[in-house]
Image (cartoon, rainbow, N blue to C red; front, side, top):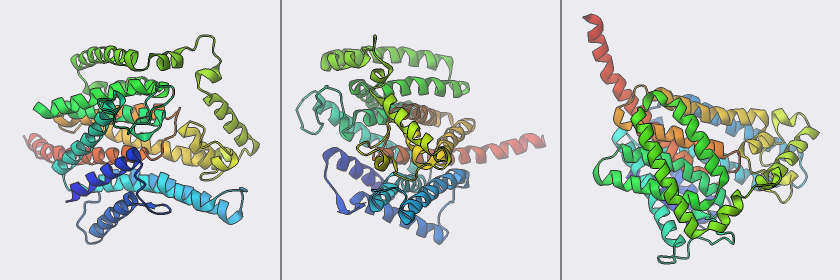
Length: 423
């Protein structure tokens, strides 16, 4: 029942975004929110009666998420109570705070604590990735009109916006799930290995069709860093096989792009003699404007202008197309460092876990490291919104898998170590 509810929450959120179902119950409250809060309250009640493992290994992650939410709420209160920014919509900013920070934290907690043991966690992760594979398959079918389902919106430039209706956000999600899906394929056997391998292939092809240069940079730069960090856990033969597979995939994707949208691809990569602003698709203009505004009040580099202040101070612009710059502008160095710590902690925790977990699950954890680093390189060029919920749900589930398996390996290794010490 628990797994069914967690998978349902994931699938309903995807369906709402993809199909535009509008499952809103009240301002700031949707069917997704209602399910999320019910699951969270159920977990709190289980903790209250002492039936839940507190997972102390992950407490540093929770503490820093809580601090980030607390500081963002404090800045929101200061703006509302003191009327600092003219035209600041307090209620809308609060709804945004709930949706873009609080709900992300709750998604992480619900999917981290929801499963009861390692088997249940691995099963949940398989189901969540399977849902994404099905969505990507539907996207592929609709893109090539076999048949035309009328779900995916066609852009004038031919680039694929996918189920999230935004090119760069979809690309960022894809580069997170590709390594995780490939890791599940390597950790599976028989037909399941073929299914997840096929899912990774489809995601790679769809990534090519987004023509999102930021996502391409994220995949290669983040992948290179991840490969360096996990070098002690990956055999040279595996790296060679991966390189060959990557080359084959690039050829396949190039063929698909040449068939589907060659003009859009060439236009994006035709940078000869172009200015830096054109090469960055105008991002450098937003970045300069953002930093110039911060320099007017130097204290903002430390404290920020307050939660969701950017759209108020830059009327007509939602964000600077850079997640880190957006955090810096709104929450200052305080908020930015808290967020960076959260991501760095997860990567470090996963790398430490690779030393003790079972060999079968190593590809999944390596996939998490690759996906997180690729995503956070891409976030230099895009801001994530509703799609972030999927990222943190998958991260929470994978972290639980790591904790459970590491505990099991420690418990089996301790008696052996004890006997060896006595001999």
